[in-house]
Length: 107
Image (cartoon, rainbow, N blue to C red; front, side, top):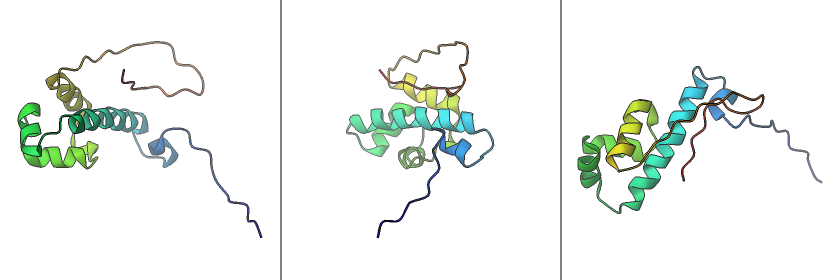
């Protein structure tokens, strides 16, 4: 017997779907944090060494690698990218219905 599974289509922002305050900001921070993690993992370095590169304590690297992005401001995450010699470009354009207000792309 096949049962129909009830589901709800996501907006693309889990924070908005959960009706969390500041959902757009949290989503953007999570996307930036994800890219920071991917760059750090590619370094193949110990957390202590990564901490030196980013100018933070080792425990902060642990929080970052565990996805605890709420511990970091967007500015701090952008600073991490700068310390890893990454260029960040901010593009401003009119918002269209159905698209997120903030996007993060890695190229």
